Amino acid sequence: MADMYKVNEMRMPTWRQLGLNYVEYRPKIMWSSKYYKKGSRDVKNTLDLAFKDKDYGLSEDILNENKEYENFIFYKEVEGKKETQTINLDLNDENTSLVSRIDIEAKEGSESSFLVNFTSTNSKEAILNSLIRIKLGKNAKAKLVVITNIGENTTNLQSIASIIADDAFLDLSYIELGSDYSLVSIKNYLSGENSKLEENGVYFKQKDEFMDMLALNEHRAKVTASNSIFNGALKDRAIKQWKGVVDLKRGCQKADGKIGDYSMMLSDEVVNKSAPILLNNERDVSGKHAASVGRLNKDMLYYIMSRGFSKKKAQTLMLEANFAPCLDKIEDENLRNELKAKVHAMNIRTDE
Image (cartoon, rainbow, N blue to C red; front, side, top):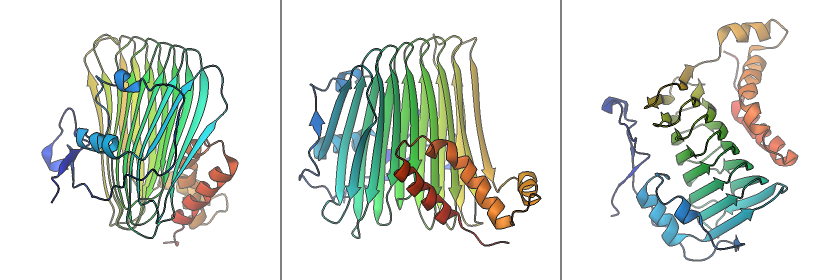
């Protein structure tokens, strides 16, 4: 039997009784050497060297599995201004193991946008091991939207990492609507002066689904800024664990880091754990961390109902309004409307 992996291990452990310091995961031997789909390699990939000294990914073991069993590779070097590029990847009964590596290198002064859309049409048990890395050069601007829209009988192992250079800006969104068992790592390194990160995330977990997410923003340079907001909803017997870290390293004077998780609990049986953490090793910085867990705001609910909406409709409007800023980042109108319709269907509840 395969050994257990420690996944999403906290760099600075919190109280043991919270159960948030790491997750134990036993790998599932479902890999296939068959290529899922031919990827593209414009030039020799240089991101291995760029990320060599970075602590990224769910765990070293899962990164090693990604490297050993990868069956989809995509590498893109971006120069100048480019239109949005979409990467659609589907888990199905012929391809139950998707081990993908997507690397993007945005060169100095470039402007680019990428949409990575993971879906599933499988009836058999399936697994996704995804690694997405993006490196922004000086004064580059990049938008990255990652969608995990996979259904039952699926395991999601998702690792996302970025390096942001001087005067560069990354607009990053992560959307998860599905997966029985999900482990997510998002780590951003603001390495250049005046580098900026705008990060949005949404998740909706239902039935007996489980998700553990670690989101880290590390500031190393002066006048860096990160703003990360996650909004989620839990229903039925879903379990969610979220750890959000702003790490202000020595030398990042005048840095400003914000991170927060705002989760709606739509059932008495759900389990929600959120740990926002601020680490500071520098003066003259600003950092904020927050978490809000509970039901919909009663005052706002009353206000909307006073405008003629039923309680059910008011609840639906409030939750979906929280999701809208992230979903609106999807430039594909059909896909955006499809996901909004799925959120609406998941969000339907009877009046109390």
